[in-house]
Image (cartoon, rainbow, N blue to C red; front, top):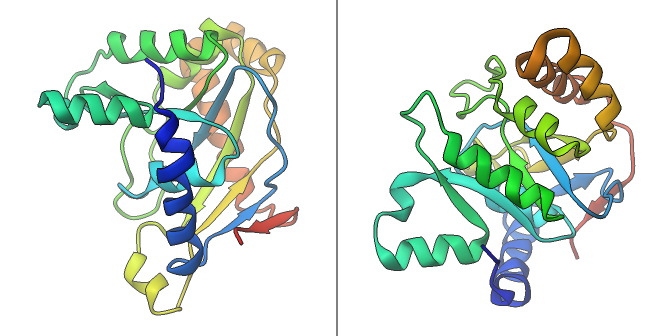
Length: 212
């Protein structure tokens, strides 16, 4: 699966413009991006999350999307061109989506994963599911945690009561995650990653970039 070049030269600038002008999105620790294979892991609060986290990342990204968005031939084609691949959220086992994520990461791509597995309805982070730990172990890729704010309340943002923000944390090295995996498997690795996301709430300092 390969992203369309139109996504990067046409669609991404449009999303960046919307994020800047309408939602005044700020990005903290914008320069902490390694090259090569990478997993981006963060909280999930809204259906708005994927396009705006993608806008905040200065490289092409791939992400999981609910399988219903791939029902028609055109939608399936379009979603794949955006860099998305399907996941059946009603199934307890999503080996197809996990294997696709592993394939992409191993090819050198950056893949967005939400450790909670689904979006939180009240902003409180849900327990981590083992998926992200499994992917991290299978790929030996570093994990970059991020924290999203504001995407769950776009109306408030448009009224200038709040704003969208994406804050990136410190890179989690494969060696750290392997220690967690040896202690408690993929589940413990996933919990470790989600804890790093939670820690970002208390770490607001860092370089900041507003799209211009």
